[in-house]
Amino acid sequence: MTRFPAKWRLSWDKSGTLEGYGMATIVQRKTGWQARVRRHGVTKSETFATRGAAEAWARRMESEIERGLWRDTSEAERTTVAEALARYRDEKTGQKRGAVQEASVIGLLLDDPISRLTLARIRSADVAALVARWKKAGYAPATIKRRLSVLSHVLTTARREWGIECANPVPLLKLPQLNNARERRVTDDEIEAICQATGSRILAAIVRLAVETAMRRSEIVRMRWENVDLRRRVVHLPETKNGHARDVPLSSRAVAILEGLARNIDGRVFDVREDAVTQAFARACQRVGIEDLHFHDLRHEATSRLAERLPGILELSAVTGHKDLRMLKRYYHPRAEELAKKLG
Image (cartoon, one colour):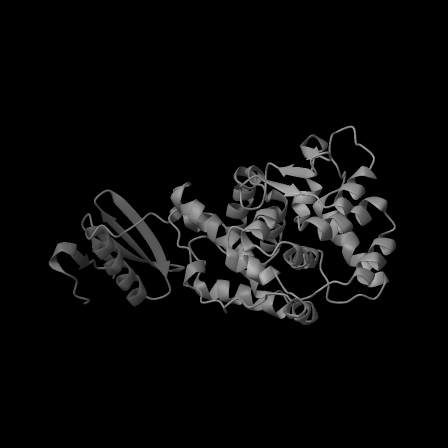
């Protein structure tokens, strides 16, 4: 007979069932061995294939309850990652500036096998397998990191705000250090070819304005005429990626681009979605045979060009909106021949 601590008060009855007097019970069922623990108002039960596994679980549960380590994971057992993702999207995502992008990431996670796990069963190995799938699909480290941050925040929210006892294995993963800074420079010929290939005056204006101002795609698309002062040559951005408003000075070319646009009734400068800009830019590049170029590279190019006219790094950061000068350095890629001219 298996020996248990005296406080368990367990004994075998004539049928071979291990009975507990107010503490633990282990009973043989058709589906296996059922262990039930009752302690300090907590009742838990599990069924196992072997009696030994049932006894081990009962001892562990009793010990956790006694030491105050036990947590009720029943809701985590019932809730899938997919359900948590959907709830987070409905309750949290819509309140964010990057709602469209985050909703897209959540959609990708919902389509992944990891979404079928319960919150109680998700482990670091499952997240590592997810990362491996994304790597195999060719996603950059920065993209993977951004997507994992969404999953991590969903799991943290489930535990802290929804009261679901679950672990967050994402921080346990050691990801490869990011080294995806791009040095792609864009030529005037490429810009002109892309603008012609878009087949749209609006999209062409967006491309040219991006190169002139170093504004992000989202900042350009969200511009409103009420914030554009062509006389002072300034565009006010009340809402930016880093959460701080800023004023963007306009070059004479940028002013000419804006003066050539028709005014929309709703007050928006450009009546177009952010994702539509990215897709149209990619199609235009494909039509004219330009490879390895993304819309965000226009911000790199604009920053490098502005640096030639604004040698003071604080002035440059005021235009581009960079709060971290280390990030600004990633965007500044001067051509060697231009630096040689400055040397005399």
